[in-house]
Structures are given as C-alpha cells and as structure tokens.
Amino acid sequence: MSGVIAIMLGISTLLGAAALFGLLWGVKTRQFDDYSKFLDGTKFDSEDALNDAINLENRKKDLMKKRDKDRGYRPPD
Image 1 (cartoon, one colour):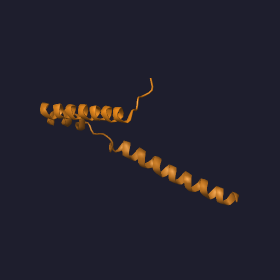
Image 2 (cartoon, one colour):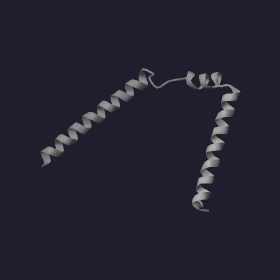
Image 3 (cartoon, one colour):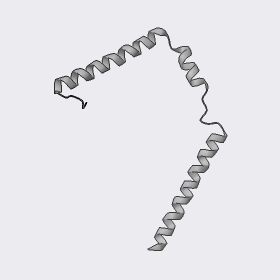
Image 4 (tube, one colour):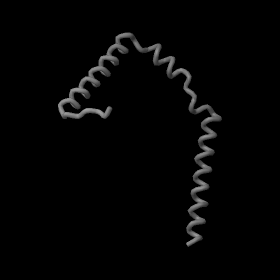
C-alpha cells in the first residue's frame, strides 16, 4: 500500500514540476505579454459600437428585473 502512495507522490511531483517549468518558460519567453490588446481595443472601437454595447447591457438588466418581478423574486436586503 505504501508503494502505491510513493508512486502517486512521485508522479504528482513530476507533473507539478513540469507545469511549473512550463509556466516559467512562458513568462521568460513573454508568451503572456499582450501590450497592444487594450490599445487596439480602444483604437478600433467607434462611439456607436460603445453606445450599442451600453444599450445592450441596459436591455439585459431590464429583462432580468422584469423576469425576477414576474417570478415574485425579491433579492435579500
């Protein structure tokens, strides 16, 4: 029984070390850096697209309120 536990600990340690090595390699080679993502998002968003997104969000909130009201649900105070 203790042999099985030792094998499981060894395999989990090996897999953990491989995952840590992969993460450190990704950070070192700058795989997670995307500086232009936010700049491109603001550069290519028009005012109409942003207004449409706000209107969609407001409609979604109104529908959720209406649905909750129809069900008789009241959130706790």
